[in-house]
Length: 213
Ligand SMILES: Nc1ncnc2c1ncn2[C@@H]1O[C@H](COP(=O)(O)OP(=O)(O)O)[C@@H](O)[C@H]1O
Ligand SMILES: [Mg+2]
View 1: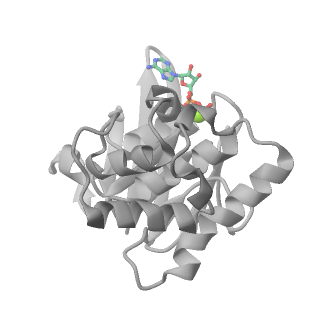
View 2 (view 1 turned 180 degrees about the horizontal axis):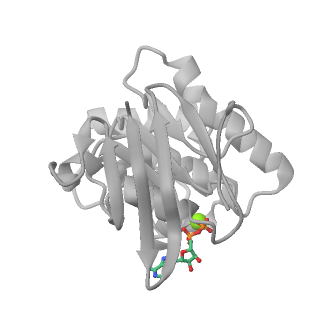
View 3 (view 1 turned 135 degrees about the vertical axis):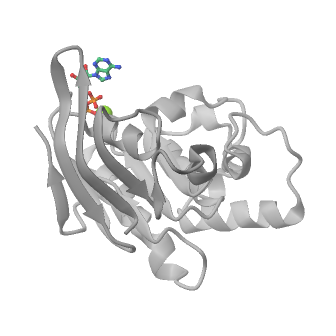
């Protein structure tokens, strides 16, 4: 199992933010978590990443049982894309630099990339249909372009799990459909490469659905 959640609840003061959540995600599955604003989607994803601890229940991610594993190590296997990340990145960096900074999961590029890393970054930009944006400052990109760059950034560390928290925020209907098609591409066009074996993101493309609220 990539994600195994047994009876997880999160209580803040006297209110349940999440109550008795059970969820299993197998390798290669794609899931959409669907729910109204405030229904607990981001909270659940933060629990999977180990940023929030549930009040009760058991969590295992990529075979690591929470409470018995090194979360910082585990997080290296999880690609993470969210609008809060988008706000924290440096807008003056180029799209290529943003992608390269994903190798060390850093905000800003502090380690000089080698030729291999640069080739990998350019390959990922190509897969996301963003080759022409490589040298463009991140802050000048459209919302949809920024999201694609963030996915390339997440993929550069070859994660096994890619979590996208509302990647379609700020996209119009057309851009939304186009974006979700692009997300499918890395898996389809490069099946032999190490790419995520599972994705958790809201998508029109897949059957699995977890409904909240
Ligand atoms: N640290 C916190 N303390 C108290 N309430 C919180 C905290 N974090 C989130 N919440 C509440 O939990 C609910 C779920 O939030 P969230 O997971 O962000 O929802 P969604 O992503 O589905 O819009 C909201 O009502 C929010 O106010
Ligand atoms: Mg949210």
